Amino acid sequence: VYHVDDNLRCCGYYIKSCILSLMTLFSNKSTWLEVDLSAIKNNVILFTKNKKVNVMAVVKANAYGHGSVQVARTALNAGAKWLAVARAEEALELRNAKITRPIVVLGFVPMCLVEQLISHEVSMVVWDVKQIKSIAAATNALGVEAKLHVKIDTGMGRIGASVDEARRITNYVINTPSLLFEGLMTHYACADDDSLDVTRHQETVFKNIVYELSELGFVPTYTHASNSAAAMYGVRNQWDITRLGIAMYGLDSSDSCKPFEDLKPALSWKSQLIQIKTVPKGTGISYGHDYVTTKDEIIGTVSTGYADGYRRNDNNLVLVGGKRVPVVGRVCMDQFMVNLDAVPESSVEDEVVMIGTQGTECITAEELADRWNTINYEVVSTIGHRVARKYI
Ligand SMILES: *Cc1c(COP(=O)(O)O)cnc(C)c1O
Image (cartoon, rainbow, N blue to C red; front, side, top):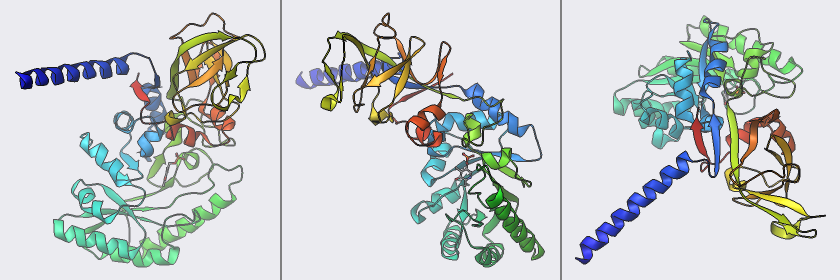
């Protein structure tokens, strides 16, 4: 009897916790992203319209915070031919979601994951012979081919073989039967700068090595170099594939590199007021009482904190009731407070916008990046995992 009772209780708890987690998923009680997949689609189509150059949708870092599986599917449906991620685990996540189209891992692949990637037909970026030899050994054990993209460092100073090493590496790939020379690539360091000097230099270095290798008979299936900025501004040769990241999300590559006008931002970040109180003059707000009210003030608490990726900075503001209202006191791990004097009609459960539009006001990821002294890439890609993603 005791056991049955216990099981029933367990079962009850289980059902209750399922219902609770469904409720948090479908009610707007905490903090969430709204990702407009039609904006992603619109943005990809702006680049796939030119059929000569394939689009590789860069969905690393959970698709810059937007949700990798949903963004990947949307981009593929909009005509992207390729997907790119930074890490092996990210590629396997897409394969687990039954996405079968070509994927390349742009960054480092630890040897323990190489076999898994090969058997899931995930392409890898390589830049040194030792790494390529280990991959070749894995292909022999598995009896399948590995698809490799040889990366040349033409001026980024990050990963990639030098121009001299490129000949040797490519030779090795070409002459190893289990390795496919699928790609030859580089990455621009300053494509989003006002000046194109560095980019011009990198273009020339890359063009020369591509031709030199082809003279030797080393011709890859695809050659690629452009990120979003390089695809939009000034770069002469787009080769076969554009690696499209930030522009696919409708965001600027940099201040000096505004995207096409028709690009649409896909992401909004919202929350709700969970408590409102009027407090007297002289009330300290949040940890350390950095903020003390100077008169009677209406203070609202918002269910978002730095553990969600909302930074513990001064100078934050959000939208409530269609108005810009200041964040007051320190941002906490799970909450922050706002002064609601400008919107006294506010009530609990009213929407709060950290990124996005409310009425006629808008806070862009770029504005938040300025306030945080960083770039929009970092703002969106560091939005926390516990922030629910809703797709519209
Ligand atoms: C992230 C990344 C991209 C995409 O860059 P965006 O500026 O977001 O378009 C392209 N190529 C490589 C190698 C990358 O790491």
